[in-house]
Length: 179
Image (cartoon, rainbow, N blue to C red; front, top):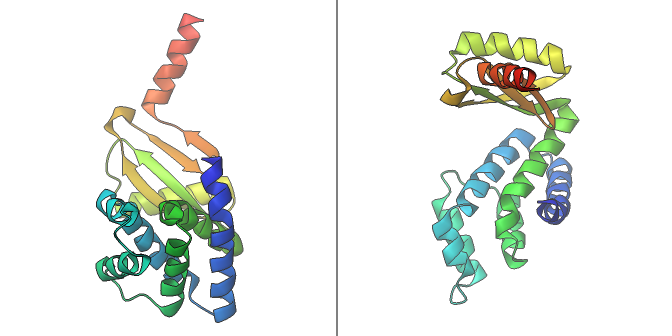
């Protein structure tokens, strides 16, 4: 994984600097980059992109044709550079690092909340306020459901983990009882 991060960093930083210099909306850039990342992660697209019979322009055409939104010029130029340099597989990591740069400038972080059940919007807003106080920064929450947690939530913000799930508590009790 470290190798992907090392390869992706210069691309993410260059895109970030270009967006700032151009005055582009960073949230919009994050959105189209996430979309391109999702497209690039698709196995069928990777198969097409890896084919020696397919040119870089054809790959670019396929990706821009599949994209739901019209890509701005900076997006097309960035995508062309990534494809020409054979870094399409690294695009998801580039998107993650770009998002981290955007969050850093805004004093925010991405957070993944894993819950045993669906969380309604009012409870999620309350949880977000509590977590923002706990972590001391604005958080962009993504919610995932994992019934194996039994109850409670597990929150991952960067390399910090806050696990208040029933499953974690049961595992702690098991460790204490078997020690």
